[in-house]
Length: 206
Image 1 (cartoon, rainbow, N blue to C red):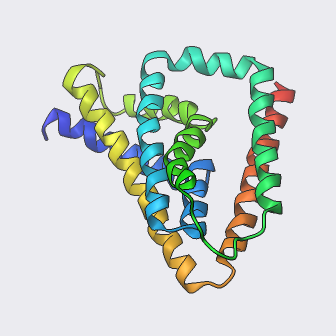
Image 2 (cartoon, helix red, strand yellow):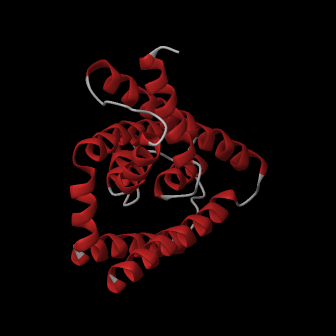
């Protein structure tokens, strides 16, 4: 198999597997699709996929340094945890919209929303540090030149495929299940609350 294709497929597979578990990004994609439509969910997915490229690059170049900094800085970890807990409470208390009206400002915000949620995802860089360590057990990769581009293209493609899978599933849920928006709000709130509490717990115990 061509070397660049190997880089691409390994990155794509790693990103697909890493996106399947529920986290802030795919939950945001689900909520946006249910509250609005599949096109808006796809915008969030695209933005998050672009951020994933940057996070993979950071893990490749500065991964262990940043990971150690985040692990040792309790203030930053507590701030991230607090943000997720507050977001969970806001989503849990929000009532579903009766009408899915959208203003031009809302239309512009979906891509930005995806960028922000992906950038604040506390799991991304540690995931890629772990993934790169696992990959190194099977492949002697050198992340340089065209091989690096092929790897990052796989990261982007894998993330985009996985998140658009959530868009399709959420669109089906929206169409076939009554009160889907309320259900999604509750699920997202519980998951975000769990993430926030667990982050705070780990920070305080460190």
